[in-house]
Image (cartoon, rainbow, N blue to C red; front, side, top):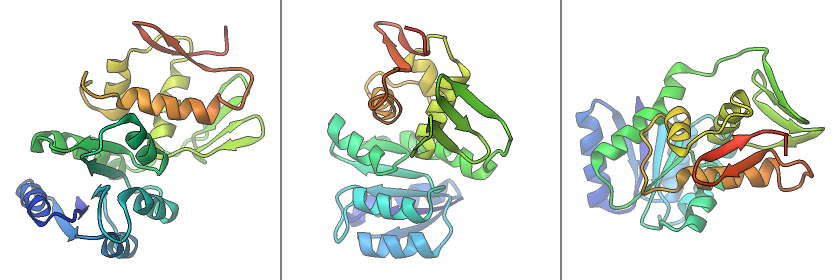
Length: 227
């Protein structure tokens, strides 16, 4: 796998690069948003790792720019900002995952492996279409719609929605969602599942009368068109 790391702190960048190269990854470095954007758009990477607070162009804006041109590239954000609003901003920009500094290097490796599986396997093309109420998910075109309205989704949001729709009517716990959608063991110290579900709710439920994602307090979430 070929990775791009965009990090303005030289020591942190060198630490990440050295550690990843020891794991046999090929790593390019950029220390600002301008250089990072040029490398990302002019080269082929399996994954991009970037800090949010970087010179020239911040990580959230840079994530939007890269995803607009190459939406298939997984992006992992690194940052010391850990509030829910910060995470929402990153995910809404198209980020696929979020790791708060300081972090253990083995945790970074777990996230990289999980995100990298999709690019190594590649997209699965099928004529299948999932449907619940007026929501449809075209698995061939990778398009979600409610009625005639197209719902723009990031790759991770699409995977989460697909998991919900394939498990319609069944209560799903946060550990199960994390394992099946993120390919990681659920970390009780993170609210990444709640953040993603809140974003998905805004996109597929907020502007529609019939709500499809429901919370079961103490149990998890259920996807259904039944009250």
